[in-house]
Image (cartoon, rainbow, N blue to C red):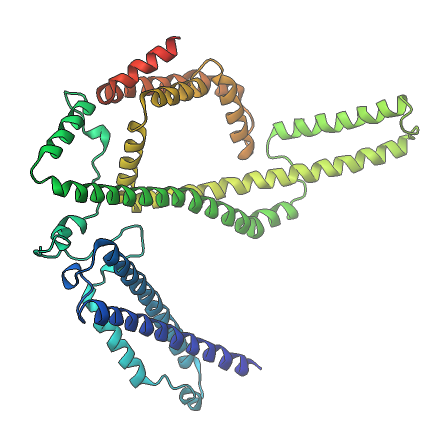
Length: 431
């Protein structure tokens, strides 16, 4: 029975390895076909064709997609092959070693074709992360289509942010002068291409920023939920099941349970006195109280175990968040540039509206009530007893610090970049 399962597993791994190699081989042939039909059997590059920008972008996307699939399938082929060799080495019967024939000549032939294709592009398109690598810059041709390739291929967005580009004169005045200068320039025919390049850079920056923001949100949430489920089933739940006497992890939960049980008892007495329920004997009343106490104990035991799970899950989730930040310095710079362009690109009234909304919500007159709710929720999330002194101290200091930082930002940056927005903010705030 075990040998049959073992052989079936080996056969499935062998088929998976061969299928992965075959898919990679077919994608390599697809790239070769594009080269032969559209690029004179040469590398897919703007200098080897006379197509326009949009047509070349189509072939470029096809190339990128095929090379990424080739990379994925080759890695799958190597992994399956390694596992297959491991299973072969675990067999003691030498006769079984000859049951599966990998057809080495065919494998070597396919790998040779794949290498010939991917070596032309130096692995540039293997990067499946947020970075998009473009082909090498081509030499300029006499045709107007390929003349602009040196500027097209460098689509890497500038990391310089709006907040870094302050000037003595207003930015709108400088932009107007620059636009007039470009329009009267004899080389104004290049303006259209410059606009297209700026749009491509902006689109690329937006895509990178949105993907990175989603990554920062989704990955920590997944790590939190998976670790909470895993750690709960392995460590926390068995511990609380074994130690049934552990119900409350802080005194506040115990006081809440006592209040809930006392309220239930008073509710029974009220219903009995009002004739809404039959009079209960002392034994019946005690049985109902025991049943309710058991229900309350189960609820608070689950809440206590859930608080312990949250501590470990949040630590792992925060670690995942920090790792992403450490490994994504380039994406952080692009995201900062995107946020700066978005925020500073708003109208003056929109900027003033957002500033007033933020300040009134977090540092305004009614903000202490919101901070109390947040602190109580955080304490309950981690199973900590509520400390009123700490809450009052936090509310008395943190909003003040936040307000000071915001005013410094308005004075130091916004007042230099968009003084009209500051004036609008003051007018709206005073009215």
